[in-house]
Image (cartoon, rainbow, N blue to C red; front, side, top):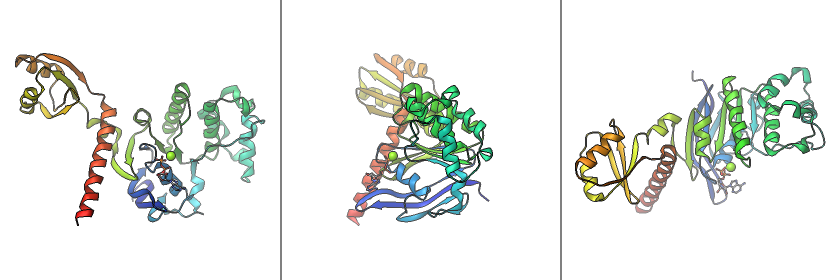
Length: 315
Ligand SMILES: Nc1ncnc2c1ncn2[C@@H]1O[C@H](COP(=O)(O)OP(=O)(O)O)[C@@H](O)[C@H]1O
Ligand SMILES: [Mg+2]
């Protein structure tokens, strides 16, 4: 049996004439930190809301812990979800807020994992201060503490660092790191590449509601690894030369220069080959790996969709 905690299969969602999710499928296995990465409007929030039973799919299915999601699914108690802004009573302390919220659900405080939640949220003494004195980042960490009281096996987080400053973002990143060390499975969304690169083990890139690419973060980043940007005095001639080098797997014109993907060679060998063939080498530098991978993937998705649309028109 598969150990998938989340399974999304052939998911479609439209709001009137707006198509938010199109034929999306993916699975999150226990222990993964899985990122849905895509620009605004890609369909990330819609996907997470459907998964949490807050929205009905137009087509397709979602499963949590192997069980099909319905608005009243029993599996939700095993999930800590932050898909909406967490709200607190501002004039009460963080601790009072945690207790109120927990007891409002009919549970007893002694059954909550208060110590574990506080250790991960790391609010220190601030937990006894009024929430109205909290920064945005502290409120977000209190939101995490609240989620963790029930020892969730899965955390579903929609853009957990949205609206935070860089220092706060780092704290949330560290917090998610602690979660995954504690063995939690995490499904989060983000439109920040660097964030996904730093916290996730797996990533699904989506654009216009569709999957563009998925895999481990290193697989996806790896697709742009060893790629180098060069500028020379005669670009066309360099293109011809480099295309024939065994250590080069691909050469493309980009801007004023060339992007060269090295199969196994070193950057210095490339420089030597160019200089040895009489080129004046103006620039040679590694391309910004992940940024490129993400942009390439999005561009590839756009092209594929454009082709699909054209094919539909033709047929
Ligand atoms: N309740 C809704 N009614 C109409 N359109 C919606 C609704 N929710 C989302 N959309 C549209 O669906 C698309 C995907 O939105 P969303 O899932 O919020 O993307 P993301 O979270 O990746 O930014 C967008 O075009 C958005 O405007
Ligand atoms: Mg969103």
